[in-house]
Length: 595
Image (cartoon, rainbow, N blue to C red):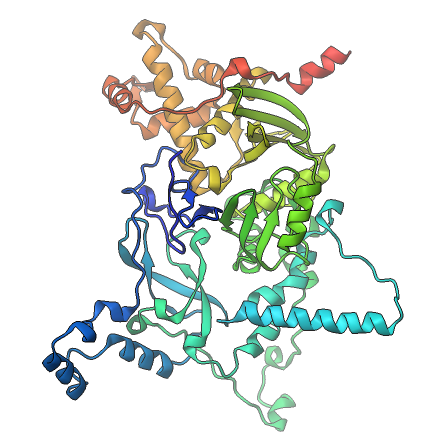
């Protein structure tokens, strides 16, 4: 773990075009420590060491008039149209004259990477809001609170229903949450009215960077755009019909028919049955249906609906222990908590609060110091241990639901269901004298027809680039080997998941082949039994290494010593699960022991 200075609102350039938001360690000092570039794929090499970025006004790049000779000052005043004219004034004039950008407009946006270099990316406007959105929202809340207080006083203490809390486990489906929050997030209610009369530079724009993952989507001001590259979206003009035309004159039968309003019920009816179109909070990856065949139009429609409903992050940051972390994606928290600038999460019980004073009060009262469930792994020293806890979703529903909600902030296609009963959760923690601090987890179906040994995997951003991704993957395969059947992760994998798994499979297979002798004549099936990796994953990995050849009409493994030697020279240090520290018995053998 290395520490670097935190620089707000920056992005990180990596190989394979994978960029991630920032994470910082909360510290009262001016130079708080921060972990390096957050990413699950530990094998990806980062760029140069993080350097301080000088954030200055545009005028700082121009000639300083106070330090210039008198004759230059005079020229600057007399010849305002010359080359020495301030670029700030030009930019401000352009921004004032520019009409507000609309949803769908495109343009190049200036982005600062971690090495201090600036680059421009094409971005699409997804949503809009006033620059002082959070101030307006705070004033509205205070006014509503004052009005509600006056009403309660006037009713002489009438009992009111308490607001749901995370401790009680609010069991709502995502569809119910979206109906109450969608207007607030997407600007379909009062937020659009708030934009009336505002200038273009008085509006913040939520943008998506083209050909980049949605985790980089963010709110930016107009000053970030290159105004010369703005591409306006074409808006169709509304045609006003006369009374006679409204009666149906000159219309076809289709045009004359009254259009029925599109509701969630009618939309689900067109997409398929309700069981196929439900979104749930749970342990697995998101799928539109259980039988998801390639090219399924129903699945494609559900995918579009999912992206539309979750296109804007509803929570911008979370505070978890000593860390402040930017959220990557939308998460369907209960309506009371679902649209907040900040959310405070207890790192032990995972209960969440939207106010800091409530969070601090909960920290004083919370007696949890480790996840629930059974400890199945412990490795390390007396001061700091790496521990793993196995948690049954049926026995600890509230904790597992809170874990799924928290994980959804960093996973795009996660299955959205509050039904966590069919899953076991394996929580990885760093344990010290203060307790067991969660660093990541993976979930696994209790009964999988496809032999999946992992449903969802996540290393929290503040603990990424520390080797935990490979450790979690290796742990899932150690469980598969003890069960006596090879396993595979649930598909499809995310971009980070693909990189992590491909790197793990490459390391395991090349290490295994390096130890084998030519006369051993190792088979693919034997490799699968020894490593716990399914045969199709082994074949795809060997094909990527160009180690599958056709010999006498058959596909054989062609062991290339040059590839193995080159890999050994890299001397990669990968943190893997040590089998001797794992105390776990498969459920099938547990039932036999009970009998």
